[in-house]
Amino acid sequence: MIAHPAPPAEGDDPEVRRNALEHLRACAACREGWLAGAPERVFALLDGAPIPDGILDEVASGVLEEARGARASGMSRRAVAWAAGIAMAAMLVGLGVRPPADELARVHPRRAPAARAGVDLLDSPGAGRIVDLTVGNAQVVMIFDSEIEL
Amino acid sequence: MRDEADLIRAAARGDVEAFESLVLRKREKVVRTAYQIVGDLEDARDVAQGVFVTLWRSLGSYDPSRPFDTWLHRVTVNAAIDHLRRNGPRGAIQALPDDEDRLPAADVPSPDRAVDRERLQRAFFRLAARLAPQQRAVFVLREIEGRSSAEIAATLGIAESTVRNHLLQARRILGEGLRREYPGLVPDEDPS
Image 1 (cartoon, rainbow over the protein chains, first blue to last red):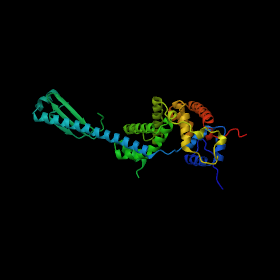
Image 2 (spheres, rainbow over the protein chains, first blue to last red):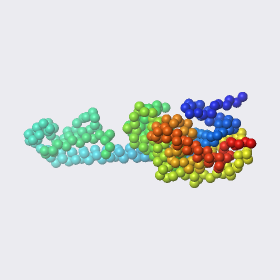
Image 3 (cartoon, rainbow over the protein chains, first blue to last red):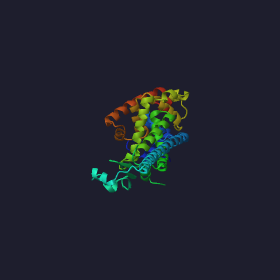
Image 4 (cartoon, chains in turn blue, purple):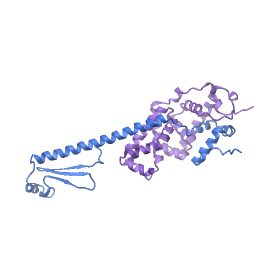
């Protein structure tokens, strides 16, 4: 004996609905009763229509290409920023651009004490790397953090 | 197999492999929803790609306390509606009723046969092209995907009463179109 499940209704569990629709696709008698007076219900039978694999593959390949490209360009931007920062620091230190520590301490005794003159690489839990560079009367702090969007 | 929440967290940190697993899991649902709303497979593919690119860029700000599928579905539906508003429906141009659909109901062979899904799909795209984008989305979500009015209202950011209005209009337009142009797909309402 064939079971004839109740037609789908609002609030049905997805599994119950799927089974009801599966039955309606195959059983003309039940379908006829269900569509009487509301023929547009027939479009519910389109639920779960298969999508060609080719289209699904194109979706995945296009998206992943974009994601890998975005990550690669993000990494190269960070690498350029790192290289520029380090080159600048090395050049300034190499040129001997380093003020007397006691003079700097006199001008900015609190913000640039003698021990902080020159180039310091500091560890920081919040950022990837901090370069503290003091040149003349100026103090430059460079923060390299992979989370920062350039 | 990795847990979905774990995949989402890893993808949010920039793990492309985790993101790939998410795309493979979700792509069919995303394409299917977009397909019914925009009425063309290639357009649906473009919408889906846009949805996943948006996902990749915004996963970092995703709030894990909210259901991921609901969020993804909302992004998909709204992207498909935007696409439809910009480009118009395609189904009206592509799908014409075939000769079988034009036969009077009484001449359609065996009522016991199963529904021909391809024929039904063509009919839907042709008739749904007459609906406004939001009306069409409401019909797809309610009648094809079986979602509740409250869920649809939340997805589209509209009142439930507006959802019911759209549904009423969409049902009327599609019902009339079916009776007039595709009598073979619906039962004969006056068997005498």
